[in-house]
Image 1 (spheres, rainbow, N blue to C red):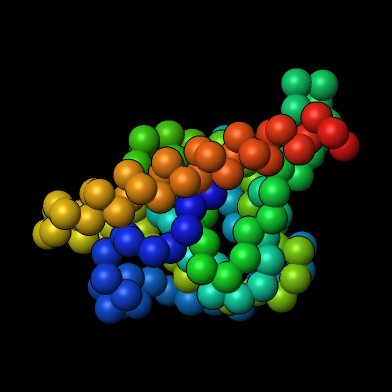
Image 2: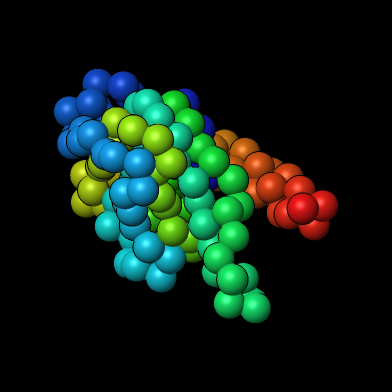
Length: 135
């Protein structure tokens, strides 16, 4: 998923986000759920799991402090493309779709940061997919 740098200012996100603590094994969102917002990982680790064609669930990769989950799904107004499950104790912030859209409307220059993060996220996804073939 995406690195947190570049979307809105820290103060804007901090004002909009709701931070909660999660136990290991907690599900943040499920593959196929309507994307309601983005999740900012403040601490801990989150596994991104997807359903393979053969019906098995596979971990695509793990995300850590400073990364954003669900950005591409929120921007595209689609469903989440994977399931996010905490693998450790974690502190996760949530910013709703409505709050994020308001921030982007107020400061359209933030779209460049989002485009940069989405591009980096795609590169990371391809790298993760390449490593799946070697497992």
